Length: 217
Image (cartoon, rainbow, N blue to C red):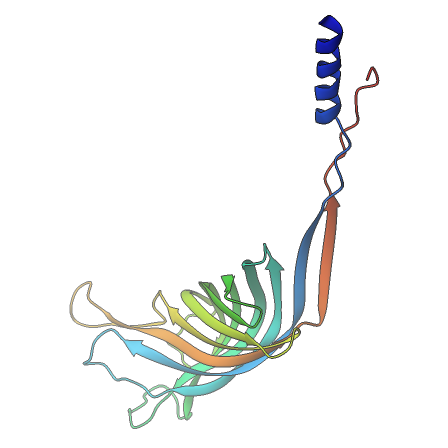
């Protein structure tokens, strides 16, 4: 009986201490260029202040996407964007240019959900730093934060097109009024399409540590 119990104990210890097969954990990072066109505009907080027309601009930079698993990924990047708005028929007391331009540096951070191998949807935030503008009322440099949504489609494994929308949360431009603490302001919005190409994929493989059987077994 004692020998049988000893045999069972050794068998159990051998099972718990057996060499585990090394399982690779894949972490893929896709990087590459991205370029696109966009229509930007400003949203007035009060219908009494002018509603300017849209401005067509562009956006270019580099992206990085970290695959978390088969369903989710994190996507970010660094981009330059030309934004702004059009005077239209609104009188302009600041300059004689046709457009008010905003030169921005954009850094988005989004959580990507993969519906299938071709279609992705993403949502997150975007930080916009205004580097330059021909409108004196805009603070330079100025930082804006907005919410961003995106829907992407993979034409091939490397080539991807996407439609996106960004709505600024903080004030782009504040208009002083005679009402104490009730100044009017504008928010910036941006909508457009972009095309990105996976130039390189970095794969990192890690092995689970192997447990060695105790020497007395």
